[in-house]
Length: 167
Image 1: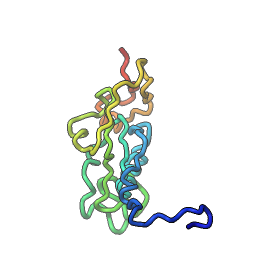
Image 2: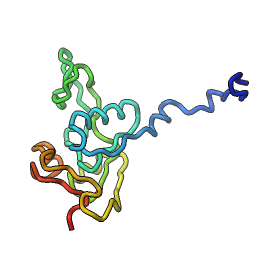
Image 3: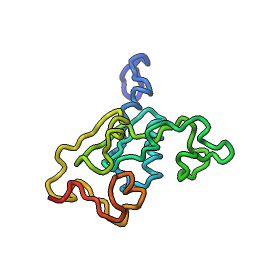
């Protein structure tokens, strides 16, 4: 028995593996736009590396994130990715890394929700009721809706995105 607790230690064969435990780790759903592109992709890659799941939030994802980085994508000299060149920390990205969130969130059925987005997920998180008043679910102010965010979300740059939509 342990001197500190007086209890008998648990046999290692009764303890879950690191992989089983890490598979239950998940990030909260934060959409692209609420988080920067760099942060959103880095969280996804980190969770994929440890066997956990990142949550896309309701903002969709860039189509370049649907597949792992191909062999030869990362320049061996600079350590930067050709597919994700905006990730500027040298040697932080590796060939084969995936920036795809395993959990794909769907709220009001808009903001970047496409069949390809849905099938690229391992798990769907569907928000059935997220408040009756516009903006109660989430709102991205117009100044944050850049050309890139608008393209991914299927919207217009500079126009405020409100979820649920005004009715």
